[in-house]
Figure (cartoon, helix red, strand yellow):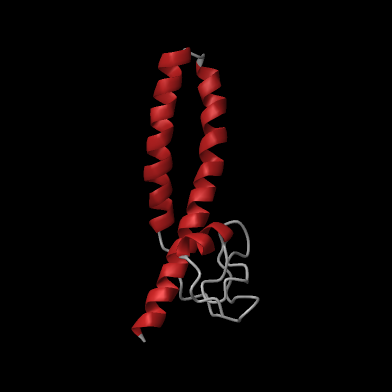
Length: 116
């Protein structure tokens, strides 16, 4: 069991918080019911709205700043903004939510395990 794996590594790789080997996600953002490597029950590790809020605040603030900078610096037509920013925001939001969900699941498991 790889219980000493850093949370950031588990989050970036999307791995099980107990063994560090099994995949944490069933799809893009859906956490598995159990780890396919060690059998850890992952149903109790609910991240709630935390990852979505992280995406809204972090990606939203960065995007607004970049959009203003691009508009002032390059003065592109409106259609460029309409094509550019959704193409940037959507993948970054999914990546941010995935990493945040994995980090929260790992932290929940680690702290629940230590409190027993």
